[in-house]
Image (cartoon, rainbow over all chains, first blue to last red):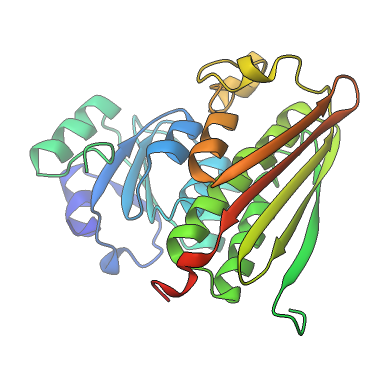
Length: 116
Length: 149
């Protein structure tokens, strides 16, 4: 699914663009434990989290995850924004809670990266 | 890269430096890509390196990450000046962690570090001395190298 469509679905705001228009998302990884991201995350997944610090971007970058969605109105730390810009990882925020965000994405046809 | 087609180097790791945590693994990933290592192996190696790097950042005073890439294999060696691991068998169990609460609040300390390294590598060796530190050698076969390049 095109990331631009996902952003519309979750009423997201783009913090770091990172080439949003070209990103195609194949699954969703929802986690607040970064080792779970490293274990179960898949290449091309969208990471949905409430963590707002730079290691989230590191985990995405090293796992070939192109985009991070901060749920529940999370405000990304300055270092997180800077690293997302440097590593060209798309960073989006939504005021929706994680449960609702994931429900919307699942209903739209995106599977968990564990199920992919 | 040497004339023999191998490449090696190392990175210094500072315990407690969460601002730069992961930068060594990120640089290593870029070097593996430049060396022509297959994408699937690059990803596995980057993840294993990141878990090992985070172990140093979380638990040790300092450490080093050394890498050696040859046509046949990649070896990542992470050595730290840390407390050592009291019970390796226990540390290998998913969910066992000695990380403090503030580290858990950052999303780490889930007790998945060594199990994740085991999952993503071909094999690894662990040497630890209580009160002195730990050396972790992580191995990847590169035979898939030409498969998707």
